[in-house]
Length: 339
Image 1: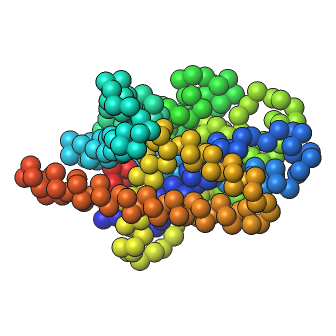
Image 2: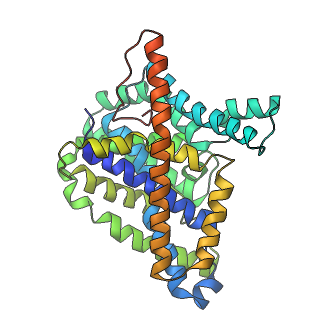
């Protein structure tokens, strides 16, 4: 049964994904010259970015907390959701005259894994989850803690400091494996979650300071990388806060969360993402101060709501497909993104 505190966290994570894409991804990273000339807007953007960077890590940690239960039907649901939006938006662009129907376009949209890093990385995690689950079940808490600690030591040294390609700044299946094991360890030690919530605000502020330091000195580190240890600590802090949250089952929250992944697939589709980025730039240039923050917040909420409404079509189509082949419609799982 889906727990509404984690479903609310899933919604928050996707709103933070939108925030990351509306901020540094669209507007760029503030330079030291920009920070010096206009410190309040620049530092505000840095604070917003730092607070939102936990989005992907926490999204994956939800899967690790519950443990993925892979199945052919679950895999089919995940791939169908990806292809529904990849193919559907492609066809819509063809009808609008924004894309050309040809073999290259069909192949490009069918083989979406090559251009969508999250889909490919999560798919690998999904496929190896039985091995990870066996490791988690068989390892003692101490052994699991040692494995997780060793993983993050290696990732910090070779994935963040040395910027090793194997970790790809956190945009990789290997980093997802680490997050999966980390969340499983947190569940084992759930009684210790209460004192961990403070990690979120402290790590967010510390990362803003790191961003400023990097901008000032040009040190070859990335404060925006998901492998940044401050981002990992902030992820643990936010995750811990929601894991302890007590919420009665809410159909409204669960419904919004069931379409969270669709928000990502729609707004980051290659035919839509450039328009999203351009709109963010225009809005940032048109308004300033608190009104700018309010305008972005309302805009992102509207985008989420529109995507949720559009996802109703995908859900109906999927249920028709599974009913036609003699299967009961699959209930959305709380442990993965195949919602």
